[in-house]
Image (cartoon, rainbow, N blue to C red; front, side, top):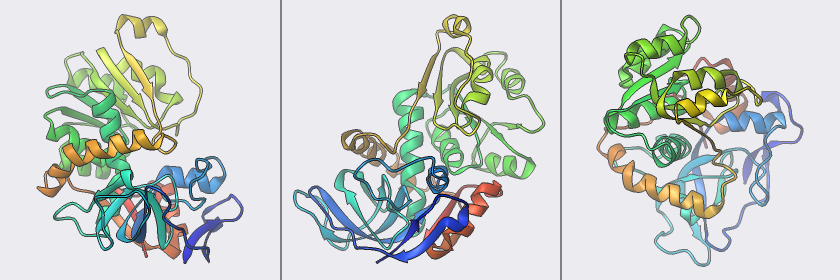
Length: 325
């Protein structure tokens, strides 16, 4: 088969479409013939040499895919050859075939085509596990989503609105904010021109956000705490603004607030399977009825993954970038 390989870390040109050995479905796995994958920030970090795959997983980038099952490994039940699926991966999505633990499979939702389904697994599992399973966002609460026009952001807006929360977002520029409004965002903050702490307080009568989903990290740590409401929960899922920051523990105590930091890729198989099962139960009905939909900016042939990476690094996109086989 062919896959995107990274012989030496570097820029987008380091992504090379090359012939590689076929994967085999092991115990508890299925083999998926890939229709499409999607680009995530983690793929860029891996390409640059900063984010190696977990031990034992594919060395090819790609944290999600869609396709058809072509082989079933030992110990797998409930799936059959020919089933159309999408999957959460630890790696290997940028390829013609990938072996997937059965617990990380999802059926393609009704009303979503096979290629577009590749835009769902990583963002839905990330958003659901952090905002709902960990931070416990409830109807009537306010959530602040940093990077509202990203793949994560566009899904977080829709899911939060679906459960009856008020949604505030940060994004860069009026066009991206307009798209966030179309998806249901209530409070629109241009991080290039506005102070998100002040804007959020003004929009919530001084209360702040009950939940904040943050992709920035250290740069926003102190300001995120300022923006939190009493009993607020800050979920950190990205480090685009650095890894080390200072925190006023007195302010954290005074607000009785909580900070969590998670990654999805390196979690044990059992934890991933539990998240996938929760997504299938709670989110898939929303997708199947059209209340929540993947937002796709563009699709590229997988052999042109370098161009898709350039688009992501330019931050010119809204939603997901797909790679098709």
